Length: 89
Image (tube, rainbow, N blue to C red; front, side, top):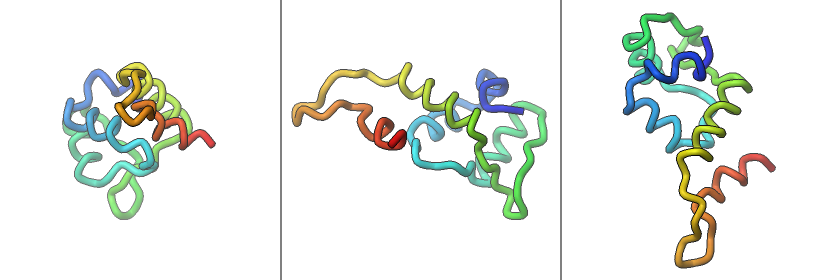
């Protein structure tokens, strides 16, 4: 399963964590457990119980971040979503 297909079933706390941590490519075990409990699906976790986000997952999350981010500038003149753009480089 991909994040895009599970998104509407995922706990809002997990959704927020995924959007607030754009540099992460691994979903921690505690969040994997919450996703599995909420969706009734089994994620392919590694031996530590963590889930490696796929390229498709990362693209989806990037799109969600951009859609959710206010593209206005901070008082310092920095775009609020600039940290996410830096990950594309």
